[in-house]
Image (cartoon, rainbow, N blue to C red; front, side, top):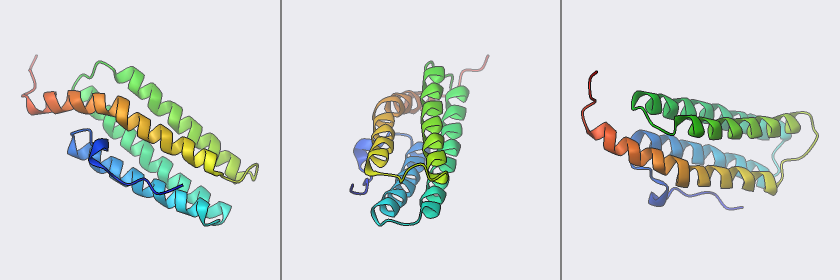
Length: 140
């Protein structure tokens, strides 16, 4: 599988989220290359751990913005985040226990999930945030 290259089509229109996404893609590409090059299971697991940690931080970042700006789809978006983290942790456990070697199929799953999430849920969030972050917050 080829590296995922940042493209403006992946931009959600909010610089701080786009910066997070670029970082996630860079770590994902490290993981992809580690699998392709047959690096050790420990290195693959460590790289996956870095990707998970960065993803958890990014999701917290997005969720903070959702709460601050009263995003109406917060719960559904958070549920998607939890699904990905759960799947990534399951995969990591399998690698660490030697139950499987990470294959292209798992990498493709992570890439597809990340891309689809950015192109759907995150684009909706970005569109919303672009509007409300530009306008002054209404005070109650």
